[in-house]
Image (cartoon, rainbow, N blue to C red; front, top):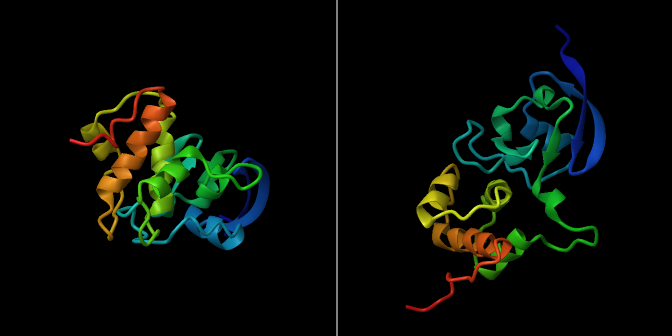
Length: 168
C-alpha cells in the first residue's frame, strides 16, 4: 500500500487537491496543509470535541477521521461560516453576544456542532440541546452561556420569541 494518496475534496466551498499521508488525521491535514487553525488539536482521542468539523453536513471529531476518508466529501470548518466580506454567521455572533467565548479553545468545535444542530430546523428543549452539545469539553465552564447562544440562534431561525433573556 502506498504511503501517500492524492485527496480531492471541497473545503469551505473550495475544491482542493492535496497529497496526504494515508495515516494522517483530517485534523493534521486541515491544520498543517490548509492552515485552518480553527480546527484545534485537543485530546486527539475524540473526547474533547475541539477538532469538530462538518463532513457532508454531519459533525465529526476530525482527530479520529483519516484524511483519506474525506475523498470526494464536503468539509466545513469555522473559517467557512464567515460571509464573503468576513461577516460572522448568526451562531458566531450569538456566541459573542452571550459571552459564550472565554479562552476560545473549545469554541470552534462547539460552533460546528451547533451548526449541525441548527441545520435541522427544529425546536429542541434545553435538555436535548445539552445532550447534543455534550461531546465537548469547556474547561472555562461556559456551558450555560454556550447553551444560551445556541438556543437564541435556534429560536431566531425558527421565528420564535427569544425567552433566554427574559427575567424571572
